[in-house]
Length: 352
Ligand SMILES: *Cc1c(COP(=O)(O)O)cnc(C)c1O
Ligand code: SF4
Image 1 (cartoon, rainbow, N blue to C red):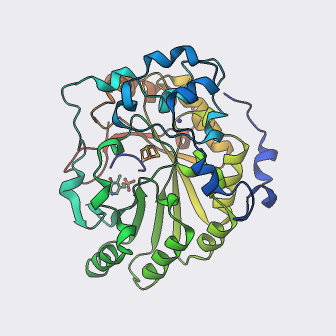
Image 2 (cartoon, rainbow, N blue to C red):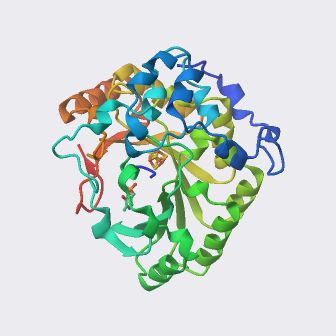
């Protein structure tokens, strides 16, 4: 489980800290997040047409190379029209290269199955356990391990959380529960409330961490009812976003991040180093600066999990290290993400 489970106009700080509540949609409004979710683009040819790139449709792999296209329209709106190399587009558009068999790129790249301790619960590292709360995502990222994960059997929420909570009760060493997926914020808020009630009975769990790409790709998800639940939760809170490029952040994302912080969360970001998307020092510098402007600190920069169908995104370690050195030479230390790789059997993410 590497991830979760990316320069537009840069708003001035004054615009970012003002976070009018009116921007948050209420569940009954026409822009309800579930409706936006359902309206996502799921057809690669339509995606290309929306961007004026219909002439590229004959280069698409058949049947989306086995991993369906999904991208919220609000995220499409942040892509540059007419640019086939747009860094947001490249994250979601199927490529013929995904069909290549590349030695070393496999289907369970990080040993998730070996770390399974209860339905949907992965316990690899001391003091924290990761719960695969949902198999759904609002966006399907082409580089993701998720394209091969057997979610059918491994979604904790489907079992009313019971197995996972029972495991946490018996193992007193776990003080932080991490909700991951898929995307845990794809669950209805009522489902999260159920989990919150279960956690309240486990005094050793002091912290809830949520790994989600939704505040970035569908910020409308961070709505009033979610925020009411989250703010009232009597736990320490961490939200780890997933953005790979500064263009992914817009005013809606700024508002979502501000609301998460107001609800008491520490907000961090993890990125994946992706060839053609963010593998240069200027792009990564812009990303760190843009995150900070939204009140978010960079956490991890992941080396790609070596998952079948993703080899064309890989950046070799020597170049990855050079990039992070360049960041260190330009940015304050707190804006330099930790470059890590996930290695099955390790007791933490492995720093490079
Ligand atoms: C990545 C991961 C974590 C979180 O690791 P941190 O270094 O605390 O961010 C926890 N559990 C599993 C199974 C993971 O894959
Ligand atoms: S949001 Fe993207 S990267 Fe995260 S789990 Fe879903 S497909 Fe993977």
